[in-house]
Length: 163
Image (cartoon, rainbow, N blue to C red; front, side, top):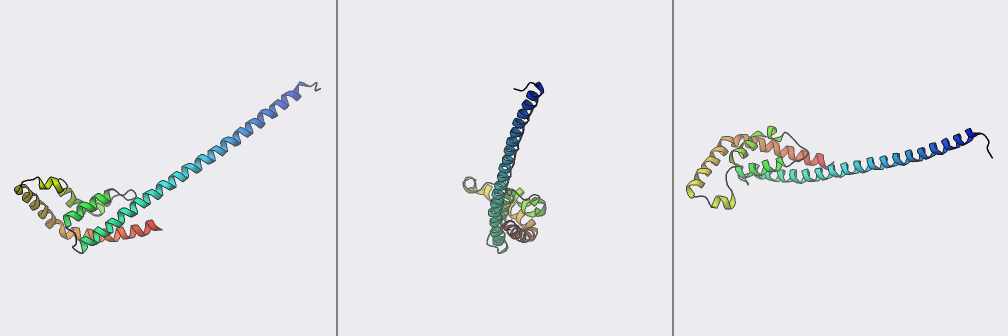
């Protein structure tokens, strides 16, 4: 039929180029789908972090408000606030921003609580209570300032995360 061998070479080249083009389109489609999946996972992760931080910050608002209204013991409030603030995923540097809250926590975190406290001798409990009260007294004025600022910060962050 065709006597010129170049025709076969050209037809073969066209077939190979067409196959490679289809393969390239297939790979580009897969890449696009993979990028979309990665973006979706990233968005879902960000949403989960926002949801987590919002829940934590709402708790911070409640505890800070209770501390401001003297409905919550200073030491207990600082303990709870420090643990909550350390668990935030989207905020950093809060120990520098509210140092007295974290300072009191660091001074009392070694003290046993609940059942462990009940196991202590009365003299040992009194000694720990005295240490805690001294720390509270030394830091109470600064803690009130930090808690007021923290209350405002947490409310603003909850609003910002909601939008």
